[in-house]
Image (tube, rainbow, N blue to C red):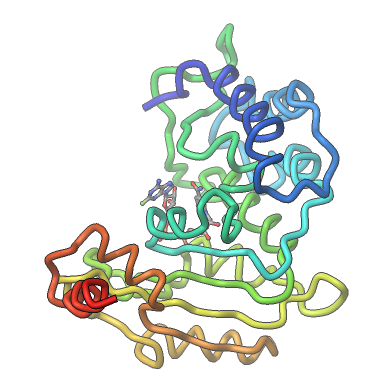
Length: 267
Ligand code: NFD
C-alpha cells in the first residue's frame, strides 16, 4: 500500500479529462482553465523527498491555493460523512451537487495513495506509506484535512450534508474528530459575500438495517446546537425521497422500499 503506480500520469490524465471534457459538460466553468503540468509540479514539489511524518497542514498549501483558485460553490455544495458512495451518486459528478471530490484539486487525487521518501531516487515510497505518525497526527491529515478546509471556505449559501443514520461500525452520525466536524463545519464563512446561510442535514437509513439515529436524536442534537450557535439556519430531513429512491435501487426487496415499488407500478 505504497504510492499508487503511475501517480503522475493518473493525475495529469484526470486533470485533462476534468478540464477539457467534464468541465464543459456540467462543472462550473467560471474559472480559467488551469495548467495541468503546473499543478502537478506544485503538488510534487510539496511532497517529493519529504519524510511522511514531517508533513503538516501547510505542506500542500500552494497546491490548494492554485488548484482551488477562483472556485466558489454557491447553493450546490454537498458534504458527506459515512456516506461516500451515495453522496457521489446523488451529486452526479457535479451535475446536481458539488462534493469536494468534484473539484479539480481533489479529483486529481481521490482514491490514490502516495507518500514522499527522503533518500530515494524517485522521492516517493512505492512500497508502503506509514499512514499513522504517532507524534504528529497532522501528517495524516496534511492532504485531506487541508482539502476539506479549503473547500469549506469556498462554499456559500445553502449547503447540504449527508449523514449515515444506520452506521454499523458503532460510530455516531455526527462524530467529533471526523473530517466534517474538524475541517468543514468550523470553516464555513459566516460573513461576507461567500457566507453560508443554511445547512441542510440529510440523514439516511439503509433499507433493512436498524435505524441508529434520526433527526433530533443523539449526536444530531449536538450538531444542531453547533449549527445554530454559529448562526446558520438549520433544517434536518430523514431519508429525502430522491435519496431513498437511490438506496432502494440497491435494495429493491427491502421492507422500506415496498411503498416505492407499489407507487411506481401504479404511476
Ligand atoms: P467518514 P468524514 N469510500 O466517512 N474528505 O466526515 C469510503 F467509504 O467518517 C474527503 O471524516 O467522513 N471512504 C476525503 C473513503 C477524505 C473513500 C477525507 C471511499 N471511496 C475527508 N475515499 C477523500 N476524498 O478521500 C476516502 N474515504 C475515507 C472530506 C477517507 O480517507 C469530504 O469533503 C476518510 O478517512 C467529506 O465531506 C474517511 O473515508 C468529509 O471530508 C472519511 O470518513 C468526509 O470525511
